[in-house]
Length: 254
Image (cartoon, rainbow, N blue to C red; front, top):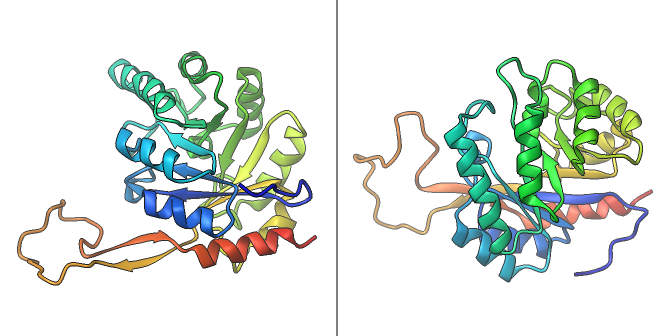
């Protein structure tokens, strides 16, 4: 992996396949976050995907641990699954863990987070966009620092990073060197330079994806394989190395 200049921000690409992880590396990314079910915001990938991605790319592969879509308030059974998934991801070559747990009132579930952090060690831990659901972001940031979390992913509690840039800037300043505040949500090669200037962040998270058409020539549209509200079954999104390359190029600019 090429040495990254400390003068430029780190670029993390969110991927949901081995092919996208390879494309992210080809485009010059510094790290990938591996997940599946992006339609639901990302859930825990399979062990086969983790192991294969870790073997096929030289980039650090951070693995999301999220047992389902919807909210971030989990049962004891789901917590048990998450702990086992953390252990399995470590065995399969994960370089970091991405997760988050909230209490019913929206506050960070510190006790359960601490248990997952202990399972993850010595790997670094990112608290994902569950942070965008907390009622008090500044207090929550301090609690994550106390827990020892290395970074937090956030859109600034808005639909996109551009809309949440003011809060992100405040979080970056409050964090200092104690924790990394990483903007993520709606970042593209077209708005990256503006977001970088507005937030002052040192790491950025994006998908840099483009539509991919299915290789299937025979198609039966009468028997869908998913529920009624579903993503297209003869096409998907995958990381575009050219888009990654453009963002990395912008990141090199002062």
